Image (cartoon, rainbow, N blue to C red; front, side):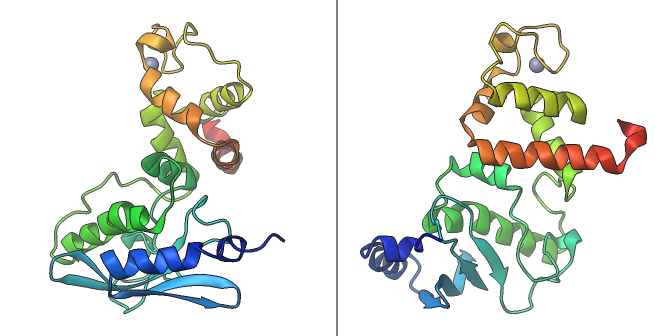
Amino acid sequence: MSDAWFERDADALPALEAMLRARYPTLHAFVVDGVCRVRGGFEAVPGDIYGIEVGLPSNYPASAPSVWETEGRIPRELDRHVYPDGSLCLGTPLSLWLALDGDFGLDRMLDIPIRNFLIGNSLVEKGEPWPYDDYPHGPDGIVEHLEELVGTGDGLKLGRFLLNMMGGKVRGHWPCPCGSGEIIRRCHREGIEMLRRAPRGYLMHAVESILKGLEQKPDAA
Ligand SMILES: [Zn+2]
């Protein structure tokens, strides 16, 4: 086991604390059992303060932290995008990586996915619909998200395409996987280029989830 991020770099935790004091003075970092957590009040929009806790991973900021709402304000229901342990469903690892361009720095996490999530929750509390794409949880949600980028919601095609892409085989003059008859360069190029930049581990996780999803419903394969 390598040391946690704040042990490898003695300046890292003081820098995080300085960032919190300057930008989010009601959030505080502390280390318990070798894990750095950030806890306190977070103002989603002026006047609307949530109690949150963020568990920073040992390789922070290279992968996504877990985030909990701590005051029992959001029901722990998947329909509300909250897991039974109270952690927020901020998206799949791949969708988060793409949204943040691979930088899971706490300020970016707070300003983008966490704030957006909490704003969405506040709207739901007022009886309005969840304002974001409502991907299902699990493999179907991963497929739906990738369908927007690649143009096909066929799990088998998607899995094959991603594996080819990871193998460096996909070329711009290939027919687009969406089936339009165009070459990739003139069709879903943008989404596919985005995916190309994602780390292998995130893509592999997506492929494995898609294949697992196909196994669970053999009729649809
Ligand atoms: Zn296309």
